[in-house]
Length: 529
Image (cartoon, rainbow, N blue to C red; front, side):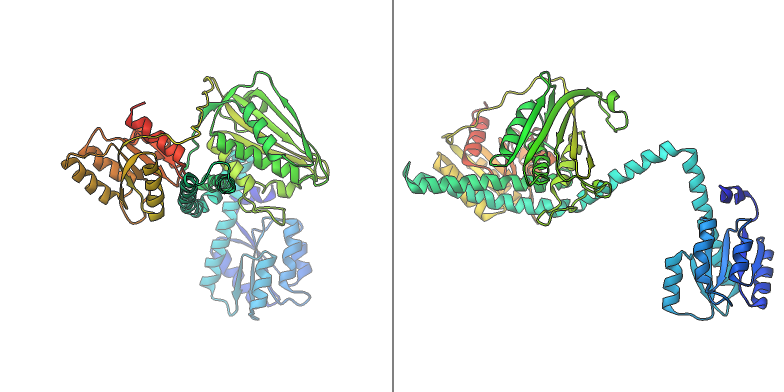
């Protein structure tokens, strides 16, 4: 461009002022400082002089005989987009300053002119211009590299937006899981007093089902929590897709056409989280077709070579495509659909697709969307394929497992200590309760010294203002290297929960837990199964 050609020449300034004395003084000052100068008395004169040459900077008096200097900015910028502007005036007002800056002026200087200020401001404006021009030169020289950088910056911005609500989301989920633990525990205890088949049992079962459904809400919040990682296992995506769609579209006027390849590769996923992703996309598709219709779901194996435009790092992927025939999404909105809190629905939270984006990213996958207004939207989810064998699902116990032994339970929430203690006592264990790590260590030492050591300990990972499970297990291992410890937390996706053995724990139970899980975990570690 013309402006780039001028970078190696003297920087030029056009002074537009109807006062000859001002023009002459500024000309002398600028020429002495090494600038090339031209002057104009009127607006048309300035436009004429800018026809045949590029000026780095125009100093515009706000009051000219035939027009306002501010009105010159637009036509001069049309001819030379890189030209910079400084407004000078003896008629200072906030309104003029705001108008000048809004039109594109880089600075606003009030008469009588302080020449040191004028020179300093000129150097500052021209330095910014040089940086802009140099950046453009670099952009043109390495456009492909900068395109990738822009994509990474957008990814980083999305990540920062997700992180910005991580602490809040994690805290809410932690507290909510503690409440759910108490609710589910009390329901289980109440059921022991109810007669099988009576109305009370039915009510308790409904309350339990609702509480378990509420657990999925905390999982959505925990997806945002900083540092959270999915608990992955090798699984069949085919079964998960079928089950999730069946659940999401139950009772809906929208149908589904499935096209799943026979030889779909296994994937390493957190089944709960990935079900959430598919559920979120299916619900979006359903809501885009209020009059009903068909959602097309396709899953196939692919290699990254077939979609080179995408940042796919692995070689083999399973690609899931979910297509609706709804109202579609505009190009402008399509760029924002994975941003937290962005929604086009009056009753939407703007978190569903942001959560999906975060989950897929934590699975080293990628999610994209394409859409056309009036024709519909297609989401594509790419998950790295696995060569491992699918892990057989462990059958959940229908009833709590009876056991015996002396158990130490540490949790900062009194309601959790109380209900968990009563649940374990109901299946045969003796319980001692502690409110934090320091008390748990003291009780463990005393029990060992008295010859009645604990058979197992359950440690809450996070104790606000006190010693949590991580530090407590370190100190307990010093006292008893053979300790049998279970870690528990409302932050179910904390890295310690996924790699608990690395920290010295023998088992893990994520809140909100039920008596079946808790009793089974304790039975297995005490019996060393």
